[in-house]
Image 1 (cartoon, rainbow, N blue to C red):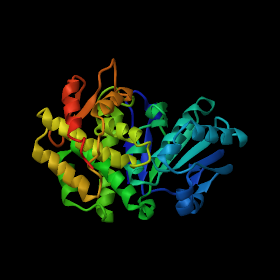
Image 2: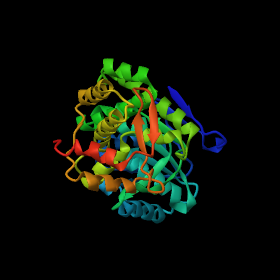
Image 3: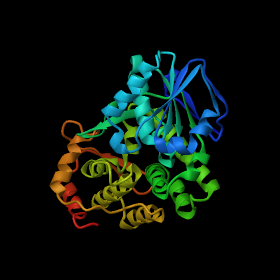
Length: 350
C-alpha cells in the first residue's frame, strides 16, 4: 500500500510513503546506511540484500536518546568526508526516531543538503518520527533544539521489522498512535479502544491510519506554523520529563504517554475535557502498559523548564490540549498558577 504526502506550493518536496512494499533499491552513487548496533544485528543483512549502489557503507551510532547529540552528528559527518561523499550521495536512516532525526539532520547540512531515505524499524518511528521532515539533535538545554525541517525522498515502512521489537518499544509507538487519535479522530480512538494492536492485521491498519493522519496535517503545515503544532500534544510535558531524567529513564513514547495524562489533567481543569474522557485515554494507554504517572518534586522548577520548549514564544508557553476526544485547542494564555496547581497533583505520583 502507498500513502502520498505532499506540501502545497512545494511540489519538489513531495514524496511517497510505502507500507510493506520495499523492493530492490538501486543507486548510481555512494550510499551510507546510518544505524545502531542493535538494529544492525537484527536486520542489516535483510536491508543489504535489497540495496545496489556504486559504493555502500554502514555507519553505526550507539543506541539511545543520550547519543542523539553533536558528538554523534560529527562522527557521521566525518565518516561521510572520509568516504568522499558528495552532493549526489544518499543517506539511509535505518533505525528508530533517534537514527532518523540524526540522519536527516546530517543530510540537511552535509554540503548544504543531500538526499536521504527513511527506513524506520520501530513502531514510534513508523507512525510518527519518519514522516514530516523534522530532524535534529538534543543538547543540554533540551530535546531537538538544534535541527532543521528537511524532507526525505521516500519512506519505506516494513512491518516485519516490528517482529523483534521489545514490549516497551512497542508501547512507546502506541502512545504516538493514541496521540493522533485523541486530537484528530474520535472514530479512530474508539476503534483503538476496541481492537488489539498486538494482532498483525489491526496493527497494519493502525499504522496506515496514523501515517495518513500525519501526512494530511504536515501537508497543510510543514514548518509548524499552525495545525502541525497539535502533533505535539503531550510533548510539552514529555520534553521536561525527559530532560529532568537525562533521557535515560523513559523511552520517548513513554514520556509522551505521561505528558498526555498531564495535558489531560490541565484540560479537565479548564473544562475542555471531561473526567470520563480523560480516564478513557488513560485506560487505553495503560492497556499497552505505558506509564501514566510521574513524581514532580518541584512543580515550580518543572514549570520554569517549559520556557525552553520550541513552542514557547515571547515568554508565552503553548499547550496543546484535547477538546473532547477527537478535537484540540492550542492555548498560550493559561495563567501560570493554574498550570502549577495541576503540576502539584503529580507531586506525590510514583
